[in-house]
Image 1 (cartoon, rainbow, N blue to C red):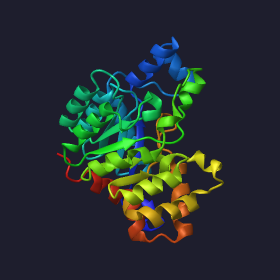
Image 2: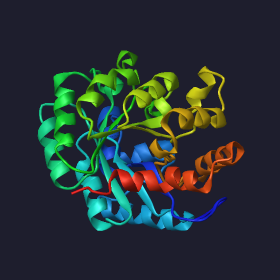
Image 3: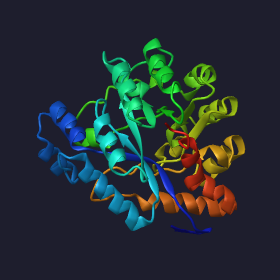
Length: 303
């Protein structure tokens, strides 16, 4: 991809894979059909075969010159969709899957997904209303720690799901479980396992930076519009400067939070973040790390 620092590969660390099962899950909660969900949102409804959606994402990434992306199965129990996408295009995708540790079969599903080669386990404590130090959550983390080249993605901070608002669905999330510092003791117990905090902590920037400073196995992903910045009167350039001062360029993962078609890959996020890099005088070497190298290194020895 052509960047302000020249031609080099770019990898997106945060792309939601809204499979047919994702639409079906929303349909079951709203009393609508998947077709009605797609129409209400103005989104393209994917087919039953997740490989078709994976193929659409490959074409979309090709159009923008993006080398690789981490695809996130965005409802618990949908790991098979991302498994299919990664199996079909192993050189283009890393696979993440969402787990609710409170579900009876969560650990078994996690172990199967890890054995099948998926790269990241996604935990949403506020969404599913549990503490990250709950023994059931730690069992999931311990399972991931048993594999090389895996990561645990832990969403902290403000959590909103726009499609739920559009559909009038309640979001009974619990912000008591949103503080990234809750992960501190757990991250220290598993020093060889890497953890990813998305959206710079989504409103808990100070806490996310404290966590990253104390735990060298914690990475921050830069994805989304980071609308939480309005709580602190920040701009993205300041956020990047503070994050680089604490974690260094070596532990920042560029991401967009892209998710649905027809919008596809959200180039506006890339442009806003690279503009911030330029304003900060980020070197070509550091830009390469954040835009691609760190994500590739994170999963280099996956097996």
